[in-house]
Image 1 (cartoon, helix red, strand yellow):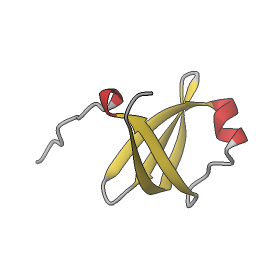
Image 2 (cartoon, one colour):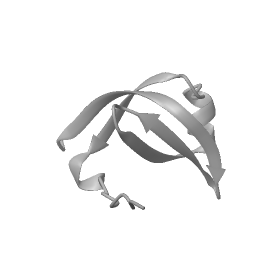
Image 3 (cartoon, helix red, strand yellow):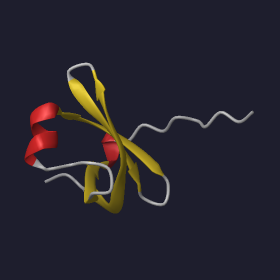
Image 4 (cartoon, one colour):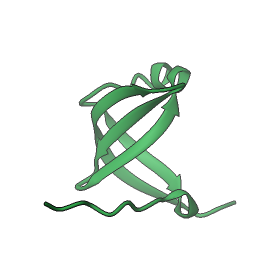
Length: 68
């Protein structure tokens, strides 16, 4: 079994992204996840939904914030 991280978050935005759906989360900082459209419907995800984000540490990609 691989190590997993868990963060409580609230869905702040949902928008289509090709064959996936881009879900933006507020966990005290911004998280972005790509999920399938059937998963979005099955999990009843919409803005304001409280979720528990679960992910492998190796799946995290940090993107520097541009200032200016």
